[in-house]
Image (cartoon, rainbow, N blue to C red; front, side):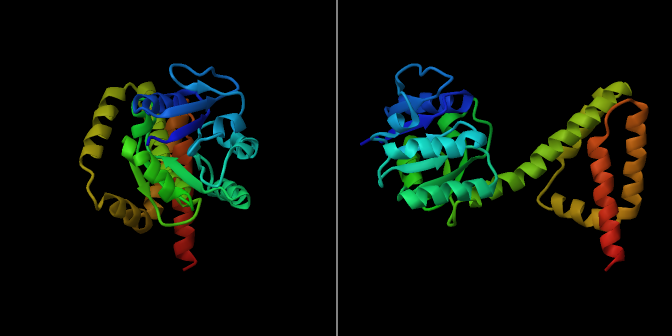
Length: 259
């Protein structure tokens, strides 16, 4: 039998996931204080109302609202209900949510969405951990969800996502800063093509080469980034990424000098 799924938060992500669940023939009970349920989603009056009779609750509101949503919804759950938090949050918050669920006898799944949800919805790649992770996987994978279950506590999935975020969001910030400066210098087209060419050449050893080169050439590269910061100042472009890179390289120099 198809599971009954409660979705708390019917915004962009929650709405897309709900629509795919409905299309898969699932009964979806939705609640959002700011968004009206649409389509075949059963509109509920509260978190607890949405959770009544649900096999799994998907909390897709925000990390700021996650604890309040959980506390408000617990009275509608049973020991057979999995509470799944899909919000991007620090591992400590996921552990707190897991602890609250544990005290209530409710299995908890820390779920990390590993790609943008728009266009993918339920089929967004997910990592999950916690004592409710296997049950979460068993409920949603048959519906087409792309879930990787980690053998570990709540917070492990969040840790992996955020470590990935340091790289991807950091790289995105570097690209935004570099292209703004290139635009001011009249070289945007050249830099876009150069970035694309460099990314296309990456291989499995690329990260290791960057890491080892940063240690080996830290002094020279720190000076290079000081010069890059000066260039951005001339172009009247904030040099946040360039300055952070300089500071990291300076720290590597200090660490090596202190042995």
